[in-house]
Image (tube, rainbow, N blue to C red):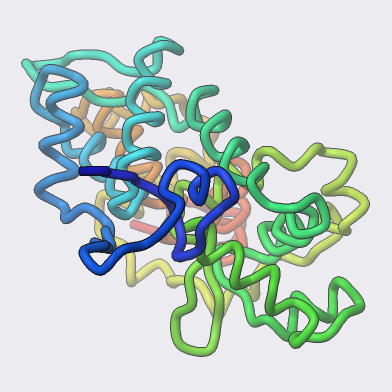
Length: 273
């Protein structure tokens, strides 16, 4: 009996060499993403400890991809970015570990060079994008991009959802974008792109009271430790809320968070109160 795990539905030359012919008892079992409880079990087994809420939320960004979950947690541990607190483990920084970037890069390298460059441009457009928009940036046509998109879907790099194509997980997209050299980002015009219109983002009254307080204190330049003392919360809890705000407001830095506060509240942070 042969048991062969592979991505996609096609058969490479190496696979044909290992299993020359498909007989009448050939059985294929498609494997989907791991469910949430299986992801948590995998993570707790790897880390040998229960997960803090912030760690549960972090592994959830892999959206059931066991290779990404494993690379993320092993990388956090190897880079010293995870710690045990009150019997549970959690990340100490919102930074992608080297091991995760290596795994994502290895998967991207399964693509032909031209397709890999196209996926890099797609990563600049955002987590999800319309094929027509990507075609326009590449001065191509949606039909010409179909082979690239189909190959990327078969490798679990992209997936189709409704009328858009998106990266298979938020974690994969973040890593793919981080792998793009800064010079290439400038060439692609990312530095000059306008920020999303404020009306597309949550307005202050849509934030919780603790989120509003944290935004205000971040805009004043306070550190996590200083914010924690003001709010009688641990720096880890503050860091957890800040990461949630980054995703909720679609920003990637404390400076961008402070800029969002200025757009919605003017120069006086006390308007939140």
